[in-house]
Length: 272
Image (cartoon, rainbow, N blue to C red; front, side, top):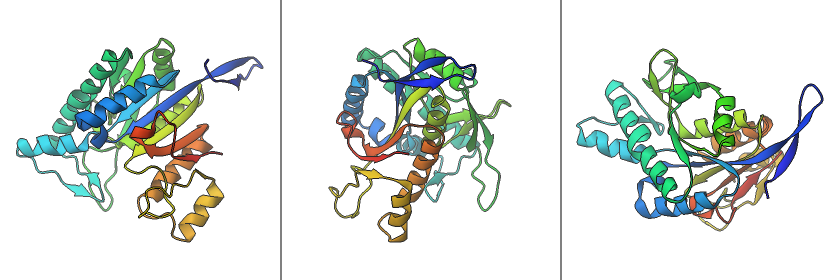
C-alpha cells in the first residue's frame, strides 16, 4: 500500500501526496561490483516512487590518471578544468550512470539515467571565483520538479549523475550531495519525500571511534548542542546542516546511514 499524505491545493481542493524515497550514494558504493550489486538489490526492493543520485569520483580520478590528466582537490572538492570536465562527463554521465541503469533494468526497475542537462531538469550557475577557482563546477539554481514528477508518475525511476548545466551549452561538475538535497526539496512540493544520505558509517555517531554509537534521531536543538560540546564535528556538520535545510524546505525526513542498511531503514533520522 502506498503511503499518502494530503496536499492542500490553493483553490481548496485536496489530493494525496504519494511517498517518494530519494537515495544518495557515493562513488565508492557504485564503483565496486560487490557493493554495487547489494545496493541495486536493496534499491530495487524499495516500494513506491524512488530516485537515485550517485557519485563516481574514484573512477574519475583513476581514468584521468590513465589519460595523463592530474586530479587536483581542494578541501575534498575537485578542481574541474576543461580536460577534467571531459573525464567526469564520460565517467559520471556514461560509465557509472549506465552501469547502474543496466543493473536496475536487470532487476525489473525501469530506470532512466539523467544529467541536469537532460530535459533541463537541473540548471546551475558556474561557481564564482573567490579564494579558489574550482573551474567548471556548478551551484544549483533550479530543479524542474514538474518534469521529474511526470517521469516518476509514469513508473520511470530517475538515476541522476552529478552533472548539471548552465543553459549556455556548458556542462558543470556538481556535488552529488547538493543535487540530492536540491532535488528532494523541489520534489517535496509534489511528494512525501524521504531523503537518505548513504555514507561509510551506520549513522551520526556519539563516539567516532565506536561504530555502534549511532544517535537514532536528532532535532535542530540537539544538533546545536552536539556541535557545541564537540560530539558532532568536521564534515558531519555540513551534512546535518543540509539535512535540516531539506526539512525546512518540506522534506518529511532525512536519514543518514550505511548503503547496506537501506533495506533495514536504519541510521540517524532528522525530522522537523
